[in-house]
Length: 120
Image 1 (tube, helix red, strand yellow):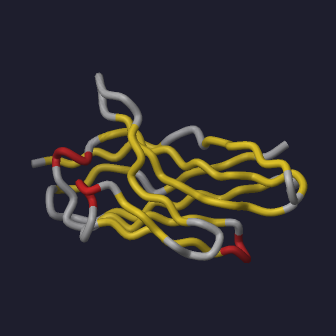
Image 2 (spheres, rainbow, N blue to C red):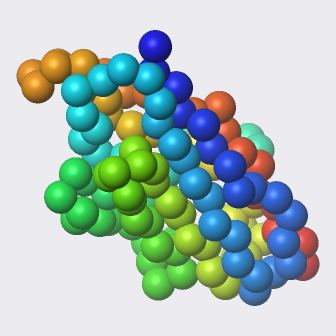
């Protein structure tokens, strides 16, 4: 059984920073792409940032220059450093990982979500 556990959410003032982390545990062959999504109240879940196994990244336009995604393959961990936070960043943030059960078979797993709240 594979689990993704997020941490690092919380309440911060506008302009502040938070660092989210997500650790994958369980039995698997490898991890492919790892991503952060968010879902604000009344809105659809959206991709925030993605990093592939080689370290290439892409970001939503709304967070470019403020958020940085990184991964530690040895620790099966992905991080999201969020700087210059805005009220518009308020959402539940979810981690997603492409888990390979064998070299040619992958399944996407999601974490349980962590709340990020920004006060003005």
